[in-house]
Image 1 (cartoon, rainbow, N blue to C red):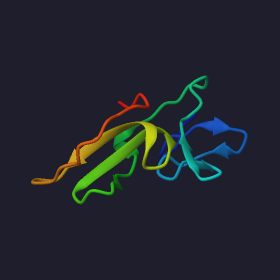
Image 2 (image 1 turned 180 degrees about the vertical axis):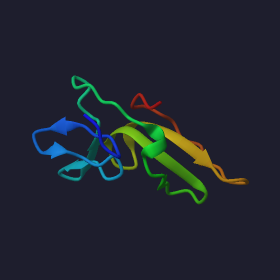
Image 3 (image 1 turned 45 degrees about the horizontal axis):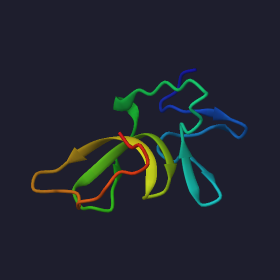
Length: 91
C-alpha cells in the first residue's frame, strides 16, 4: 500500500498520518498492532507540540496529548519539553 503519508487500514478506510482517526475523543494512528504499517517518516508532516519549538512526527498514537505514542521529536535551539513520565509504553 503506497501513499504520500502512511496510513493504516481499518473499518473506516485509510487515515492520514497527520490527522489519524478519532474514536470518540481519542486519536488513533497506526493503533492496530495486529496490522502491518509502513511509515516513511520523511514524508510525514511535523506537528507542533504544546511546548514552543518542539515538533513531532507521529508514527503511532492511541490517545490525545497524554497517549501511548511513538514519535520522532525535533527540538529548535533553546527549546525543551517539560519533565514528565511515560507510563504508556511511548518510544
